[in-house]
Length: 91
Figure (cartoon, one colour):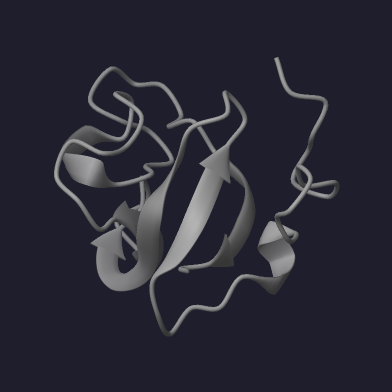
């Protein structure tokens, strides 16, 4: 398991608080999975309020708990999706 947190990203990645919301980037999740993703608006949270979510750029290239490739506050199993803990630019 990684020693990283959202405040202390893994080596070679930047903190999620600094992640750009206007283009695709490489996300790293706490289990170590890295994949291209981008922030998208137009989703609804559990309170039916408009919100944005991180979404995988490639079908199937994301954690299994990211239902439909989206990092949900609460997925289809009623669990939080695995969070991203760091990001870097797409090479």
